[in-house]
Amino acid sequence: MEVEALILVTVSRTSGSVPREVGAWMTVLPDGIAGTVGGGHLEFDAIARARTALAGGELDDEVRYPLGPTLGQCCGGVVWLRFERVEAGEELAARLPIEPLKPVALFGAGHVGQAIARIARDLPLALHWIDSRADQFPAEPPARGWRQEALDPPADAVSDLAPGSAVLIMSHSHAEDFDIVAACLKRQREQGDLAFIGLIGSRTKWASFRQRLEALGFTEAERDQVDCPIGVPGLAGKQPAVIAVAVLAQVLTLP
Image 1 (spheres, rainbow, N blue to C red):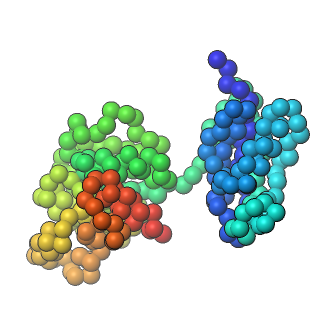
Image 2: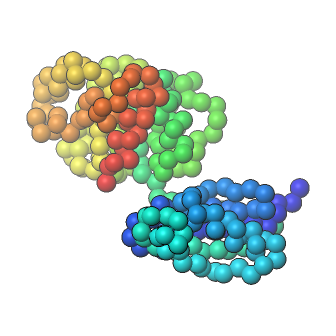
Image 3: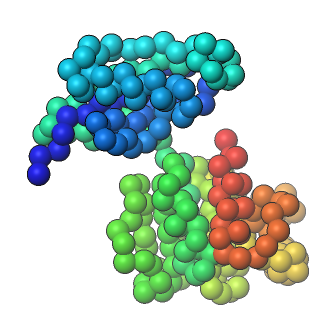
């Protein structure tokens, strides 16, 4: 069945307080949409314009939307939306803006690691997922920008991580966790290019790790680069999904 023509709507410019960033997009068909440019009356009007064009009406290349009382939104900023017709058979992917992905290294494919990976599929993250057990990874293919690696010992992957990676350490073994932490601190000493090192566990676990790291010659300043327990504070609950949300929220706050 041939795909219908559609309208690609993209946020091309913004000024002030707005609901979505430049590059956000949605596609509009006569009977459906995908994506979002911000919701509310802004999106309602954009969908109406797009469907009028699909029905044979004129299509403006770009429309300016002041987000004030006239539009019924109180953001106060201004959004410019670009409208493009994509004919049946044309390649849509080539038209979509390429969203930059934040590199994240996830060590561990246990319950929390699996929960993090599930949620991360909908986030702008490039996940390098490492576990010593190959059968722990899901059967579904990796998302865009992902890499899944079975490696024993997993700490050997640290030297291969992308610069700027946020490292999340939560393997099935405290011994593996310790070796990964030590490898990360060694890389920080030599290269200083990891954005974040987070370790799952209790304060008791971290106190033990700190002593062992000190014995290996890591200074207090170096040990202070590790965030343990990982995750934004204040979220109660130890369910894997709750921990995953806390961890990913912390990652998304990183510059």
